[in-house]
Length: 188
Image 1 (spheres, helix red, strand yellow):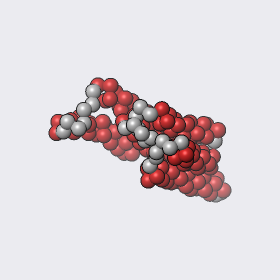
Image 2 (cartoon, rainbow, N blue to C red):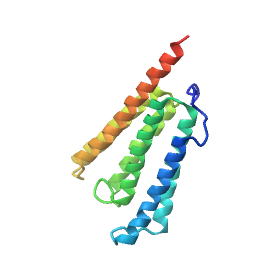
Image 3 (cartoon, rainbow, N blue to C red):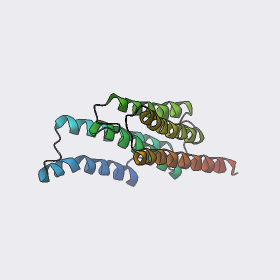
Image 4 (tube, one colour):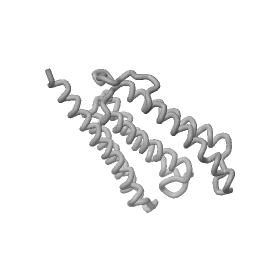
């Protein structure tokens, strides 16, 4: 994230950091609480470990981005992208998006995430390139739906639209961060 540092970067344990990790802890406890009231939620230790690891990865990635820049638009863009990726993975593990969680067609969503990750690396995490990477991710998300539809595997138009919208919102926020960075660099 070279070149991304500006005022506000590098802070440790700020209020947003505490809020992110605190929210993650509460979200991890929700299934445990739900299990006390309904048999519809029946998690075992592996479920909690996987969910906890996913939360730790998402929160850790956000923490790295938050420490690298004080740009609020960039932080928001990272937050939206991480939330979209988190929900996409969790849905696939829990119930599957195409058919059920055991349908191998759901592995195509790994390609969607790969587009975002590879795009981010190519962009070197710079905001303008990250915006492009998120647009490519949105297109990959839509392509999975088209492939599923053509193959007769079934898909959810609304769910695809939801994820495409999240990737595009993230792209817009990254581009806003790029404009803000350009203006800050142009100022004497």
